[in-house]
Length: 199
Image: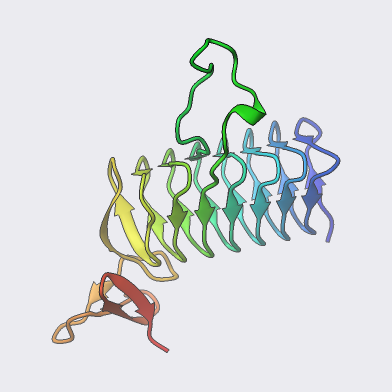
């Protein structure tokens, strides 16, 4: 397998691009970023300096992933989704001077294995989106999202659970706290606000 990079994209020479990855038109991959194998970076997407991206990740068109974000394997970032990195964004300091790299501390978003962020969703600096979680389109994530959680709204709140297939889980009749995927039949146990796959 080889890497496919469209001529109109900008990929810094220090970036590491895994085998089988495709980078589409007008995407920008900054210095020291590392993308795993089999990724797809859509048109106009941005990956900041030093960002770490696992294998088989999809960044849809115009997704913005600011440093020092970390994306696990199999993560999906929807069109125009934004992962921010500044708790107190300002263009200038209190004296009116333009802020530079040393004038603020970047706080990256972590998106764990298999999680998905819907179109135009926003993850505020420093949050963690758990394994196989699903963030609805347009949601604003300002707190950590548990594994397998389905969150929606502004600010995002948990409205249900999802399984690895991304389908909303259904609580089994007569078995409180046991959730089943209607697509795969996989079972999960809910305990103290967390969901664990049944093995």
